[in-house]
Length: 112
Image 1: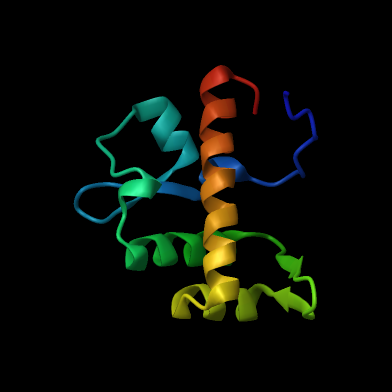
Image 2: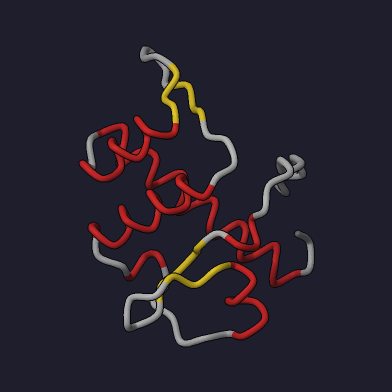
């Protein structure tokens, strides 16, 4: 079943989605337009995944997420949780990994 939920208006093109073999972030735009040699998200170490997600959150114009049974997690708190790889941080990493896959797929299809 296709997910036709509209995406929020954000600059997804400039935020990192992968890393080069020498450790530089690759934005979605660079991935689509330049197709550089890359290490995809699922091949990054846990530390690198945490760094990438923390950077994506840092670059988000706004960031808040509600966690069931918890309070609203703001940008600063989310980055801290991701860097420490707590249960909340690991959940945020998983969500971002799914978002990255969807963004790449949509961008390559011309639907972003």
